[in-house]
Image: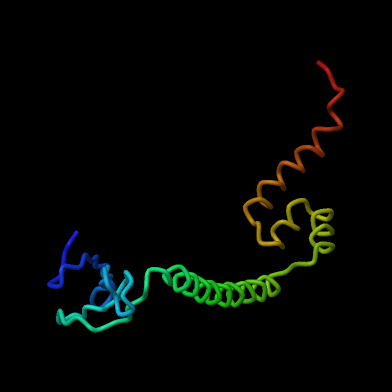
Length: 139
């Protein structure tokens, strides 16, 4: 694990435009062990960041998770409502589809957008209709 000029262990994580440096500090600003979070920009310059006491890390991470969870819920709700609106525009009348299937087998499937299934069903059902009267016929 790398050690900085103050003998503190650190880890760097690449991000767009630089890196995040997380440093463990034995004696932080309040005298207790702390973690410092900094940004190293594209030029290599290390920007000063917050120093968080180890005892507060759980609360900080929890707050970040809550913040991001709220953002995800907003995004999920938005994309879900957009999906529902798209589906409403594509909805088909089930009674009309059933009626079309009675008139011409497979036409209801084609109406609902399942064209290949409609094409497959048509000869199958027509074949059943014509073969059924000859089912008892023996040679």
